[in-house]
Image (tube, rainbow, N blue to C red; front, side):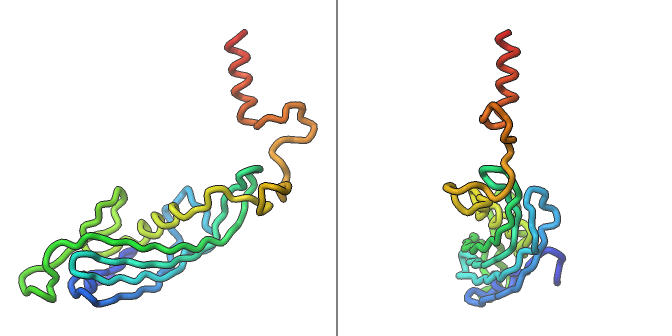
Length: 175
């Protein structure tokens, strides 16, 4: 049975040693904090040892982040891999006629619905962990940014704009 947004891994869970491979493409439609230019595309491979479900994946997309210095949008490719292990409890149906195995995922965000992987949650988790820490529009800290600076050149105070608001509050407090 195929269900939208779920990747059925029951065949691997119930038959240890059987390797499954899937091509994935998702736009992470419900994600508000990530700016994707292209859908996330990649592969997911799953195999069970009987006690552990091993899931290996490789994904690629293009994202928009902010320059760490000037705040301008920066487009960049993002490729990442994931190598996860999920606990399997029970006896796989390949070894017993009256029993079955199931995945026990101990995650804050649910990754499984029965033995089906929730694709968007899994990809989102990997994407967030692999986002670049500090993107720069110039490619280096040494050179100038490629976009306009946040602070106008005729500004007498060279400080960051966020601190100007704090300075005004402090001036009110002392007067």
